[in-house]
Length: 187
Image 1 (cartoon, rainbow, N blue to C red):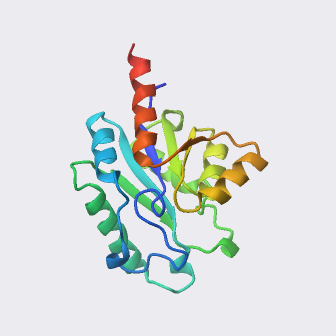
Image 2 (image 1 turned 135 degrees about the vertical axis):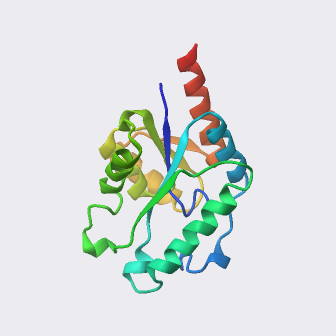
């Protein structure tokens, strides 16, 4: 399988999530192994793109500027081992807004494909939530469910809706599998 792009959820995959939202850059805690996992993807020539729901903006809990500051903190800290996050996209709306950008909507993925000129079939998604699983299913791409963040609800959602997923403990384990699949393609 040719994999050129790994889509990543932010909270619960790259940094620790919080039921009270991540509202300030100083609240960001990068999860163990994330910088090394991103470096391995970068070294393999695979781009990493964050796709995230950030309803705290739509709820008025933080501004778009604050959201962007948090993304920059995550991107900088996650790349501390030499990995690179190519781009990031987020939906600031709440669930009630029914925005097609909000996962499980796929508009942000289409925007990433358009901006970076790759085929969606060459991508995978690593996430921890049912919106992540639903988006991957709509796109027809492999989904890695990390056992962090909201994974228990996402696992139940996947099983109830017969959405295929690969359970992994964290991003590093997902990258192990992604790189293995990519190496198999080369043989």
